[in-house]
Amino acid sequence: QVQLVQSGAEVKKPGASVKVSCKASGYIFTDCYIHWVRQAPGQGLEWMGWINPNTGAPNFAQKFQGRVTMTRDSSISTAYMELSRLTSDDTAMYYCARGLAAKGHDYWGQGTLVTVSS
Amino acid sequence: EIVLTQSPGTLSLSPGERATLSCRASQSVSSSYLAWYQQKPGQAPGLLIYGTSSRATGIPDRFSGSGSGTDFTLTISRLEPEDFAVYYCQQYGTSPLTFGGGTKVEIK
Image 1: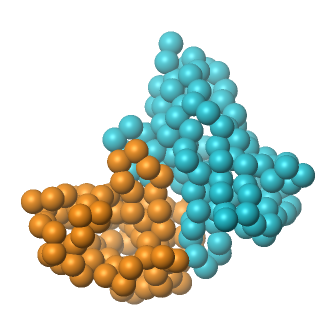
Image 2: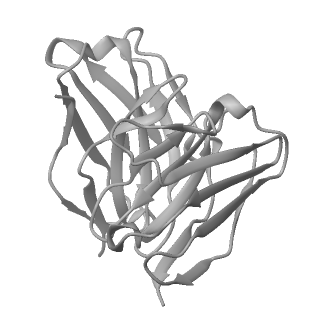
């Protein structure tokens, strides 16, 4: 069965960077995009961007340009999202999700809580 | 970017009642690329509807989606206890992908 398993919770200081991983299983990793979506406490969902695991090409929301990096290691079916220059506004649950062109995000990781605090 | 506005913000209903949730877009969305997600407390969102009206795998037929252009609707024909949750619409046809602000369906 399809699964996306994310790395564990992180606590970071303002100005630091965080790197979250998302390991996929149960399907061919290079067949589907991996999207990253975040959710601040008590708030709605915010799309951050995607990576094409086949080519490695990313696409980011303008808001995160220059601060986010999305990579993948196809040999271990894992995608990564790194966010730099963290502020308290980046405190959120970060989700990876499988993206199918016609079906939206059909499988989601369990989420990784990133807390930014001095 | 395409802004999605969901209404109402909160819907207070009883089990067995019908729920109608609205999602309005700031510009036309291709019907092929409008989805609805359900999120329960402490859980990741789950796909309910894609392509405006297609139910995702395992989703019961009391959930239905409709609409076109800038107006889309999620209908739950008869609310079950497990349906009380937050629902988000999303357009995934134009980058940046965007979500609505969500509608909370709560027990009256």
